[in-house]
Image (cartoon, rainbow over all chains, first blue to last red; front, side):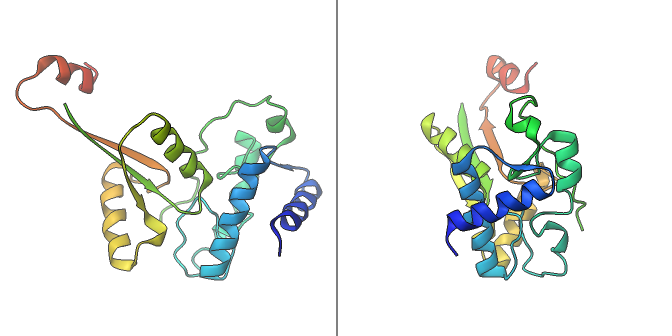
Length: 106
Length: 82
């Protein structure tokens, strides 16, 4: 599936959830490339900014959108990798801070 | 002062890519450890090393090793932020 079509699908999905894709389009396309790369090698769209184990069951919390995205977007205006963001984030109302890893080490 | 820079990164992570660009733009020589494309054994070793300094094992992580030879008070103060 071509990158731009996926971009549009994810954009629709984000709006449905009341959030947005990061306004930095190139950055989002890079993230999508990462997701597709992980889907290709692991069989699931594991978060591009987290190391996957290759075991889908173990990694189900970091399959995009990850389990932590809702809380991270509420607290920091963006998810861990920066794909999904709040409206305020895209309008520059929220400072770009490093999102700490919420995932507990197993 | 001797210095070695290591970047622990993931090949799929654009934030890691931004750090690489930053280091290259600033002519910093660094070693990249692309942890997700290492094979099992190498990955285990790399994670063990990363964990020593970043227990959460998150990416990107830039590790800067500095060696100060002899009692070089000025550099010791600078590096140890005293």
